[in-house]
Amino acid sequence: EPSPGMKKDRSEPKEDSVERRVTPRVPLRVLQVRGESRKAFFFGYAVNLSVGGIFIQTTSPKEPGTRVRLQIPLQRELPPIECGAEVAWVQPFSARSKNPPGMGLRFTEMDEKAAARLDTFLKSLQGRGR
Image (cartoon, rainbow, N blue to C red; front, side, top):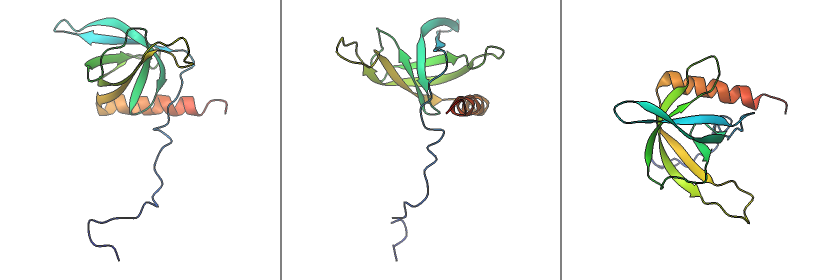
């Protein structure tokens, strides 16, 4: 019998269905919100998305550790969701690589309403034409 705090049971299925990355039909035009003015500037195109983060295709990625505020337009008829994110890794441009250049960001701050909208959006994309 395992002692308390020594849980070895890994039989619980991980809910990876929503953690799985999803590729939007059209790359999403992501904006960065900057400064006191809260002006939004073009940041890059999201080529894939999950509940945990986003990959932005760009030839000029930010340094890992850079924190940004993003606006992500999920549906044309609704305002974009806004969240905090941090650059987790960078994919530099390489003529030999099949991977597009850009940066992977993990979401660091997102309110419940935005998270619920993102979850719904991802599920709607996962359900299309498999």
